[in-house]
Image 1: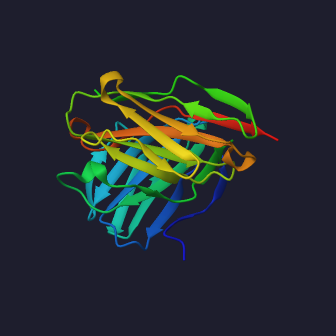
Image 2 (image 1 turned 60 degrees about the vertical axis):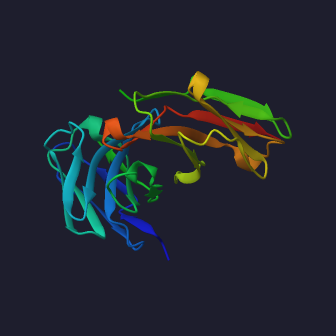
Image 3 (image 1 turned 180 degrees about the vertical axis):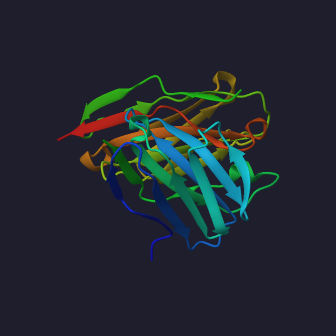
Length: 117
Length: 115
């Protein structure tokens, strides 16, 4: 039973299109994240939600809109895709937020590779 | 500001060699956490270890060991008797309260273990 699952695993699309990536976790965690890994393997946080509330938004273009319908789901919608959006997007979850929450271990999904042509 | 530096971009060794992956971090907080993650060629990110800033004891887990030294702000990772299956990109990461507790990654070290 996959702990953090993302769909789709691969996504190839044209510039200007809109696409979504879905993420679900069955660990009972309170906090979910989106990370972007670029072609040089650099991993950078994009967003974090705790119990459906946005807590981290790392100066990501507003073409990217995360949505958390409940604490087990965090979806990422991207409008007007650009070539530079090509990357692997990782969803992750962790136990909670609050004092000492930095100690929480992130469990990552398998990643969604987005290619914009 | 938080920063994690992994100066070794790529390392190549022959099986059974020992190899050390370096990690140097910067933080202004006294309470922080350090992590190592492994990303094998299949692409998933696998948690290896978490260490808090108050625990400087070295840790050993099988062929893996970690050396945490606050005096040099380093958290190095050693693989003893490396195996081909150890080939992966290894990431060091830092989480502190000044950074809203988000996990900041180094750029990773790609380790190739040749038979």
